Image (cartoon, rainbow, N blue to C red; front, side):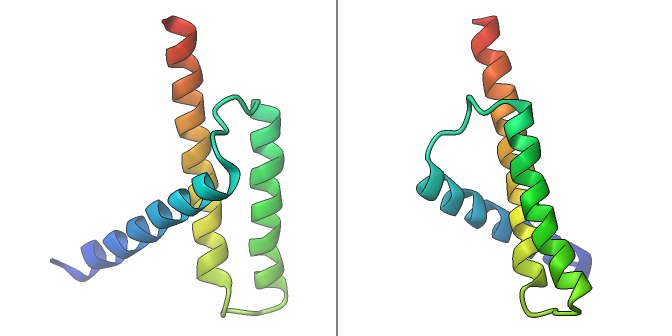
Length: 87
C-alpha cells in the first residue's frame, strides 16, 4: 500500500470510528433539519478554528476528524430522509 493510501485509510478509519462514537452518544439524528446540521457542523468547525488560532496541534487531528464525521452523518441523514420520503 502506498503512503497516500495508508494515510487515507488511517483517516477513513478514524472518521468511521468517530461516526460510531457519535451514534452511541447522540443516537439517530436522521430527522435533523439541514439548519440543525449547519449549526452542528459550524460548532465543530469552530473547534478546528480555535486549534488553528491558538496554534495547538495536539487536538487538531481529532477536531478535523469530528468535522468530517459530522459531514458524513449529515450526508447519511440526507440520503435516509430522501429515501424515506420516496418510499
